[in-house]
Amino acid sequence: MKRANPNPNANRNILLITYVIMGAFFGLMVYFCHFLFTDREEVMNNSYNARLDQFSDRVIRGRILSSDGQVLAQTNVGENGEELRVYPFGNLFAHVVGHSTKGKTGLESLGNFYLLSSHGNLMEQVFHGLADQKNQGDDIITTLDVGLQHTAYLALGDRKGAVVAMEPDTGKILAMVSKPDYDPNPMSLDASWEMLISSNNDQGQLLNRATQGLYPPGSIFKIVTLLEAIRENPEGYLDFHFDCSGVFQEGPYTIRCYQGTAHGSQDLGQAFANSCNGAFASLGLTLNPESMDQLTRQLLFHSELPLSIPYSKSSYNVAAGSLLEKLATSAGEVSQWEVLQSSIGQGKTLVSPIHFAMITSAIANGGILMKPYLIDRVQNEAGEEVKKFLPEGYGSLMTAEESGKLNERMVQVVTEGTGSALRDAPYQAAGKTGSAEFETGKETHAWFTGYAPAEDPKLVVTVIVEEGGSGGRTAAPIARAMFDQYLLR
Ligand SMILES: [Zn+2]
Image (cartoon, rainbow, N blue to C red; front, side, top):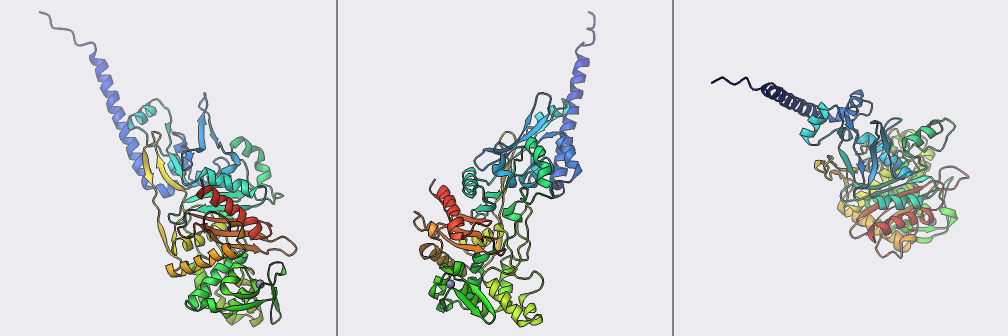
């Protein structure tokens, strides 16, 4: 009996085993790289990091989705493998979702690491690696609500300004609109880029006014002045009384109520509801400037905000030094003028819309500020969760008792005062209007900040309309549209 020839399939088997071992080795490498880069998330999220570009050679950038799964950004791959980032909603989410050509902004920058990470099936990744194909990057599911974003966008119309909507008990940012805007789709962005960055362009389309815009707060700052009055006199703060003739004279200084309206006899609740400038300027003179300065710092003026997208810091009065120092060092009259002005949100005080949305959120949430956030979770191509972001408390901006007292006064603004646009709503809203002067001879900026329902707040909305005139007439109706859309859907 002859011995059989060596198995002709043996060589092929050995080759196969070699491939399997190579595949397993490659898989380990993928795993190793994954852990290496996960630990370096902070570094990798920097949009200027060149190593991320190497990542994009191996991964097709993931999608950015709304909270209900609608596509806000995705990468389409053509037949020749060319990739095109598309934004199906065009201008609607321009600032908050951002763009990824011409640098990265908004969520495209904030979520860069996740979008270029791939947590797909490991075998598939090994296969892609061997076949020199790209893996599909992970998707970001945002906190953004398409319906609310659309409502804010339409309500703001062609006017310049910003709208922010937040969930006060979680910190989820539900909508963030800034106007004027631009189309982040690459072809359109390429075509308009020179115009957008031109020094002759004073429109600021690329600026996210919701977080980077700084405006005089005008009368929405009376929330802060009122809180200081409550803090200094918790039991008797409502005993304040003022007779308004429309013009308040203090020494050489004159403070006028909006359009010279004479409010007549006002207690503090009425003065707040009607936004009486004379009453609040005179109230401001009775407050302790050092304590007021401390309060503004507790409310995050001059501070970093717990926010992971670019923003501008708010300032109270003159940015450097406490008001007390200034009172001690500068001429008395000048300081008195500063006190009169800052009590009604004028003078040199500047705020961003997101900052006032955060203060308003704290009031709506029993004094506790929840950190605002935009990314709810990250999931892989198959829809499996890779990372989940949970609501996080930032801290207490005021006591629960103080927030309760502010809530009563902000309800009164709607039931009796300048918040009349919300008066007949089927829910009880609370808020404060503002009409902020910023340049002599120009219309005031129109503000509204508030929440609803007052007894169990679900939504905080802060609106600014540049040169919109009266906050009650221009900004409050935009907030009304937002509350209606969200609470009556
Ligand atoms: Zn008045």
